[in-house]
Image (cartoon, rainbow, N blue to C red; front, side, top):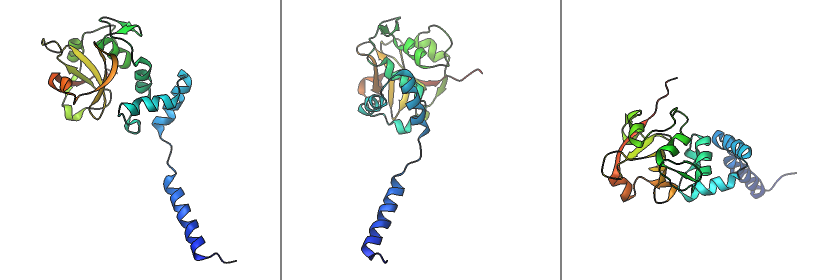
Length: 182
């Protein structure tokens, strides 16, 4: 039995469309999904949270970093704080960055243990330093992507901000990368 040419074209078009829309598994989302199950977090909530912040998880590299950021979201700021009840910027960085082995350091001390990198070379997980009180480096965050970074803000607690915002762009001092001594 012969198929009409229009039916045959329709079948071919559908087959091609279906093949183009089948995507290979994304290792980031595979791991993120497993971490969500382990941490009893709804994957869609994480996707929506970062989407609302204009963070493209398709470009992200470290699923655990994003789980941790999600878990700390909206924790209030407290100078010297180390818990969900209140945390300062450098302790927040310590919580998120597994390379840091010390119990506490100021933003300035963190800057001293990083290797300087040009801002154009920023990668996910690098540290970004700011002068917020006029006396040199006094604030730190973790770079994510596309000019976005996460930090504990004295006015808003744990948030994601853009380095392009006038407040942060005027106060940016330097970027640094912690290299493993392993």
